[in-house]
Length: 196
Image (cartoon, rainbow, N blue to C red; front, side):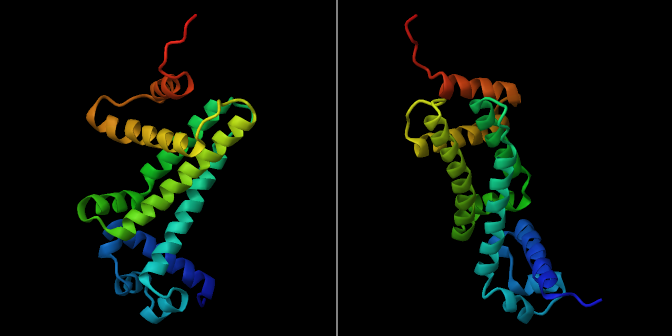
């Protein structure tokens, strides 16, 4: 049975994603993707003008997926801060489980590859933007005090990254409940002692 055009494009995207996940942005070439996908280079150029365009298409799909993961984690019957935690937790797990994102992080650490940095920033911006929108909804519904939603979203995201990735590598891993408790103490209740 002959492979259709949409099937070929999807196959190229799948193989390219695998190649970027194994070899990183720098180590992946169009020749390599063509060999792995069992197509000619010309077939790839039918769909994508360059390696950059192919890579950006894959990153755009990752951004879409991370937003979907965050949206699916929300439950209208749960309290606001539980939903916020669930969304952050789900997106962190998604990030941690994506071989492509792990490889791009390694590539940024080792080589400082600009395309890899830009891809990671796109995913991070999607997560921070999602949190920001949730905080705005929380303020509009009086569940969150007035704050700079973008800055607070960024701080929440970075706190989760620090607790899940950095703390767990240097200290005893924290349970989900302990992470929620720590972040609730810091962000929900604040550190200031309030007079009784």
